[in-house]
Length: 139
Image (cartoon, rainbow, N blue to C red; front, side, top):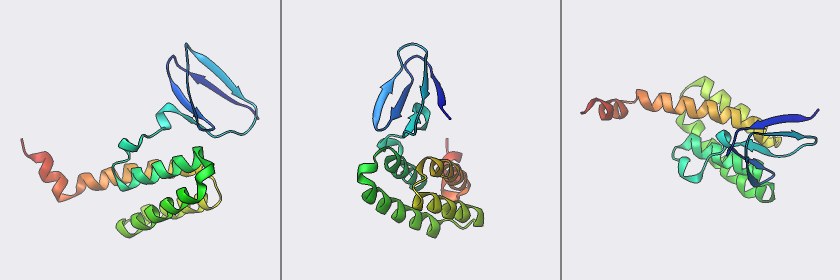
């Protein structure tokens, strides 16, 4: 079943590792399997500034750069291990386990959705910490 994508003018996407930018409103129809990420799903190394975001970045790289899959999987394994040790929530740990299952079966695109959940959970948890509360309460 083909995948239909509409890109706005100047919107970027990654297709099998190549960065494409739309000139004008563009409609694409992908007829076969390809590694594709829309611009809003792409994270730069500079944006990967928390453990969950580093996990997302590593997973994204495994998805768009399968030539270096072993290195990406090693990084992912290390990051998942760190998050499992840090997270107290059973739900967050379960999402980490689901994420790991997807990575083990090379379902990197689907694993990115779990990473987005973990990023949101991490941000919420950090906002609740006393250090974060104290930092935001000062003028």
